Image 1 (spheres, rainbow, N blue to C red):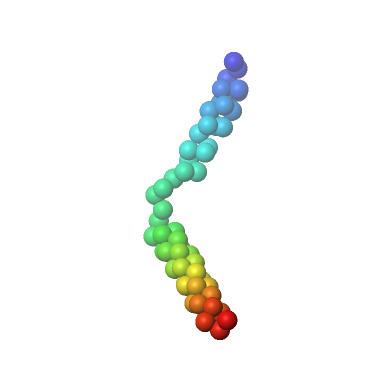
Image 2: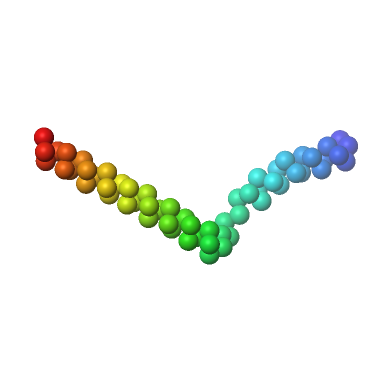
Length: 57
């Protein structure tokens, strides 16, 4: 196997590992927390709307 093929093969397997970095910085963690809070708020609003709809019916 040529050296170029070996380098390409190594890059194919190494790049996904680099993308799996879990050392998020504080800004990334804050953004994730805000996303989760917004999603939970939306879910709570949907639940409340469903309860109101059920009560009206």
